[in-house]
Length: 176
Image 1: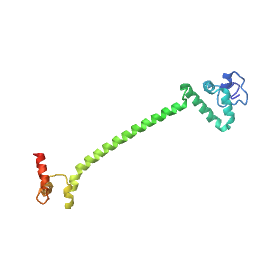
Image 2 (image 1 turned 60 degrees about the vertical axis):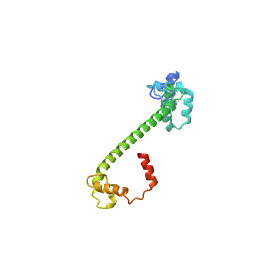
Image 3 (image 1 turned 180 degrees about the vertical axis):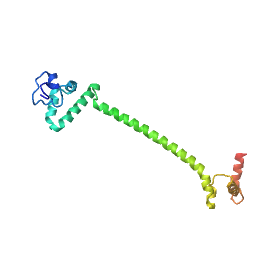
Image 4 (image 1 turned 30 degrees about the horizontal axis):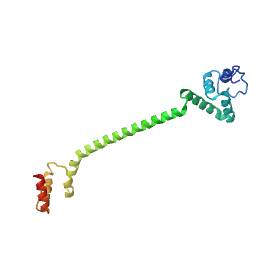
């Protein structure tokens, strides 16, 4: 007998005398009859007894815990058992990972927009402080550098640029 004079839950359910060396007594106490009832319903007392006898004593408690979990899962989902629960949880994790990736992408896009906005505001003031003429074509229009930009525009359209007369005619015919 497991604890004192009362039989364990398995012996009580099976209506038999609980022996001193009952393999079920340490794992199915009398105060929790539902635990053995569900395991017996799904796996059968004989199969559970065989499984427990084949295991070392130190692994039996974990095995009983797994059997109880699987039996509960089989009652809820007779076809898939705990595999159905695992599959459901994996799908949930996958969906949450997808939502996380979308949220991270949105955050990145917002950060990039703010960075571009900050760069656009900071660029003209940063660039104006350079004395090097190489930077002037890249300046954004401000009152300080409008003259320089107009010089570049005038230079590109001046007689210094070689023009193809045929292209000029074609361009004029397209636009007029």
